[in-house]
Amino acid sequence: MIRIIYTLLAVLLLVSCGSDNKNPKAADLAGNWKMVEMKDPDITIDFVKNELRANEGAKNAKQKMENMGNKVPDALVGTTISIKDSTLITAIKGVKGQPSTFRLEEKDGKTYMVIMPFDIQRAQVFIEGGKLHLKDESVNAETIMVKQD
Image 1 (cartoon, rainbow, N blue to C red):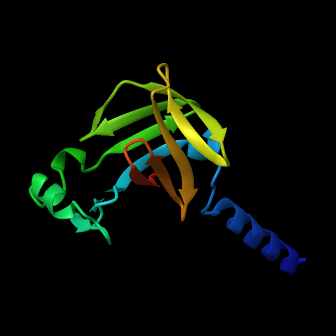
Image 2 (cartoon, one colour):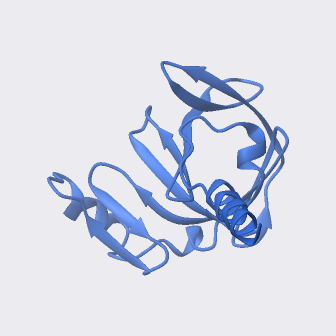
């Protein structure tokens, strides 16, 4: 009996700590998330290590890093998003923005977050390694966040 209980607990922990979700639902996204990384084809901004890195094969990394003064932009440090139901609130430097409504849309096996009402801002959204990824293909950039709850 004890063995069964431990087995069930282990399964429960594995399921609840499941780190990958390529097609999340709104409930999977709920909570408070802190930005830890932003990247494009040329550079990665690492907010945890407080550093800029040139990506492998980058063509414009040096210029982009120089344009940022070769340091992590202070204005973005500590950026968070709060998601509840279909509402998203971004906070930059602790100052909350206006709530935005979003919907999730599946297309070609991927889930996209579409910010409404204009449907102009959409990003692929997925959870990998326990981190929330928002990948905006229109600008070829990705934001990575960790859950704060």
